[in-house]
Image 1 (cartoon, rainbow over the protein chains, first blue to last red):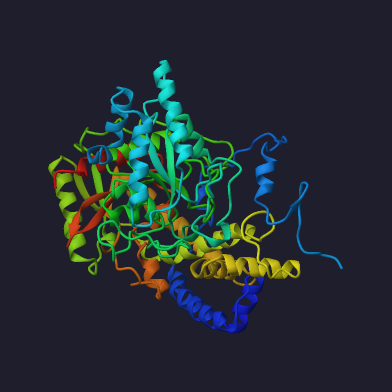
Image 2: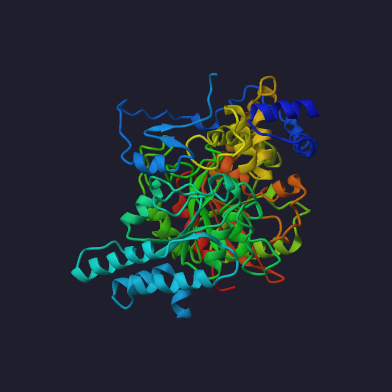
Length: 95
Length: 476
């Protein structure tokens, strides 16, 4: 299953990456090299095999659904590229 | 002075508690060594903060407070483990170059409770993606044995710092071999604990079903010591296991008499480097001489591990790395006319080529129409790989393998060939897929380049793994 140049451009858009023309060419080549390597998984008979290797005999732990405040808002906001009060500022979304 | 720097952590702990050495003096010596080093193993150094913490330990000791045995011991930690303060946690990435964490990772809290002093954050492959430490935005780490050789990755800075006596101990993280492979290349001990043994709270996520934090040291005893500090349940990581934490050093020195050691035949293929095979065979002879029973076992799905791993790991990475969007922290592009442009430019400017490649692969294998063919298939193969281990470890106490197929390769040698680079991890990724613990222990050298032997154990049986590793170390 080879991936096309157009497909790579579409995946880049889904992944929110900005790839130039040359980047798309290089990425198409590299992704195809890896994808052709992983083709060998098709040799394995996985009929009736569970995809959840970790869940055999285990359950998901639960904890009480209570609100815990994070006590260091100032430092968390100090790292923001742009913040005002307790808000993160981003480019205008609705014109 | 050099005698102090080359001492084991256990020996230093003895000197500290006997009052023969102050924590401040010890930290100063290591800080000076770190500052003078030219291997690029650190991304950030904690000078004043570390010394202030050391002074607090000394003051507590002078007052006669009861202190943990580890109080005052310095170490370095990989730069994907968050530590509150001004020093950024960069993850080896431009996108986090200015990220100062507002909280401590669980392991950092544990280190603080143990009175241990973090001297600095070690260099690494960006977001722990790499096997050579060449993918760091802060430049590659030069190997400790030969400067033109890679130290391995992704915990290359941690392994190099320990190998060069720049720190007695280090923390790394291991998603597909990132502690064990650099430990092997640098000639030190490195352990990946059982999945769930150590909380991942505060570890920057790469492949969440594979990631584990673990210790690197120059001796097995020190490795056990540091594992004891960081192991244990933490409710903030839902995959943290509520299992009792034993004394990991309890089995050290007990030898291997009566233990059954399996040699998985798939890990000794005909094409294995003959010198690596010879070094590992010498370890097998040691175990035999020590009274262990050696049996051949089979892990039949081994050849599919790299393929399954690169699907599972990249899929998880693509989801985990979606959070780096330039909104709340980290790099934001100056080309941010609208929201979408901001996301795309921030991410493309901030992530290096290998990270972008893995995000792309992961997004592709999870995308509509391909999920069943790639991701679901890989997860099923993973189940078969896990069953291989359950079966083999039902017959024997531990498995012994080479850690890597070759000794350290040259800087630049595999950079243009992702598949060959990925194949470096052939003997280590299986362990992450199965979630079992494994340690790499030095097994001599080939042409001066260290070789590692890997001891693999049952889930939560780090004790036996370390016991066997201890019987392999020393007396070459």
